[in-house]
Length: 163
Image (cartoon, rainbow, N blue to C red; front, side, top):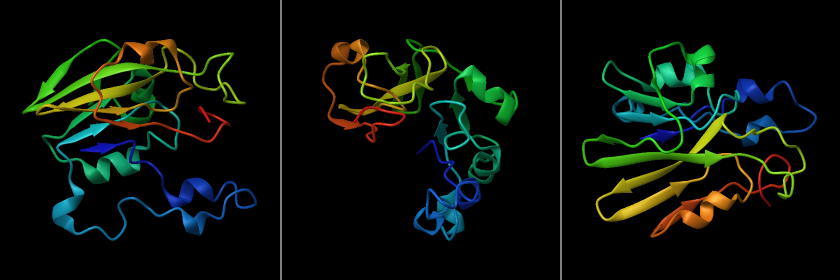
């Protein structure tokens, strides 16, 4: 399973004075061929640092389930499972539930570019464990409703996400 596997060095060459892109590894460069193809690819939103067709196409095979919000269709085409918060799906023994992810006016992010309804986070159930991947978001009220999380992967940074 890959979540938002879109960080490519080529993306960061647009901002050479802000980011030393050699520090950002290509997530698929140098991986052994048998590790490259995914069974599931989850995308949180349509921004190019999360949703990039060149990366997704390199990681997928004919049976790969690509799950993404509707706004990712423009980049990836229609060969994806479009989801919204609250939907639930099962892939083998993995349960996937998209949840809200967005910026709030009172949140600690300084640039409010993640609007409600455009992106998601994921609650991923594997066996008795639940992993929460928040996506790009501030701390939002819906998070108080998530119970029994064993591992939370949350964004920090303060510019586009919580700090």
